[in-house]
Every structure is written in structure tokens, then in C-alpha cells.
Image (cartoon, rainbow, N blue to C red; front, side, top):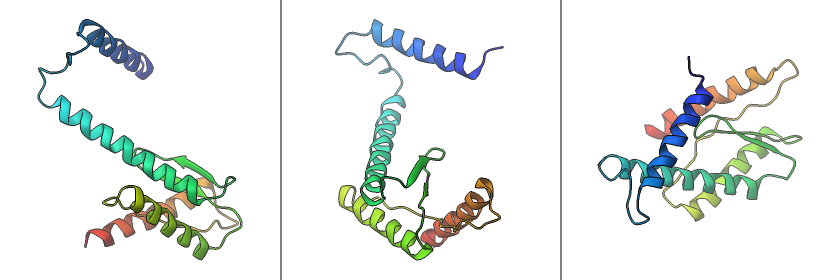
Length: 139
């Protein structure tokens, strides 16, 4: 049985071999018409994630904690601020993102840490509010 790490390593090695066989001017995946748009969209997605992360870093304090949570989600933990201030900071992140990538936008779910919260419970509340915000944006 192959572990996920072994499978990733095998795919990476296969990709490396494909590039090694190709001329510098050739694309080893050129025979797959779906590959180029997929790689272009992945590059655009990576650039957008970079722009979001940059806006977060420019907005939040150096000791606020930010982690990437899944593919395109971030969890930001701001200490000693009210929910209103956290919402203002999200607006500032959106403003800065709009300067870098005018067509981009973010949806956010905010939750205040309660004395009885666990990491899972506070993130679950924020996640529920995030999906509510996404539904509102679409309608």
C-alpha cells in the first residue's frame, strides 16, 4: 500500500522526469489541451492567495496569528480587540486587496472567543458566519 506522502513523491518524481526529457523550449504536457489552462488558473489562484496574504500582513499586527485553513481560507486570531475592531480590520484587508487585485473580494466570518470555547467551537461559529456571508454575497 502506498502512503499519501509516497504517492506525492512519486508524482513529483514523474513530473521532474517529464521536464528533464523536454527541451528547454518544449512543454512536456503540450499534448494535453486541458493542462495549460489548468496551470494558468493555478498560477492565478496562487497569485490571488499571495495578494490576500499580503493584505492580511499589512493590516494585522505582528503578533496577530494568521494561518491558512484549507485551500483558500485563512484563520486570523486577533487578541485584545473587540468584534467591531476585527470587522474594521477585515474591511481594511478587503480595501488593500482591492488595490492589488480590483476584481477580488473576500468573505469573512467573525467570532469572539468565549471563556467556554475550544479552538474547534470558535472556528465552527466563525465558519458558520463565513458561509452566511458567502450566501448573502451571491444573492
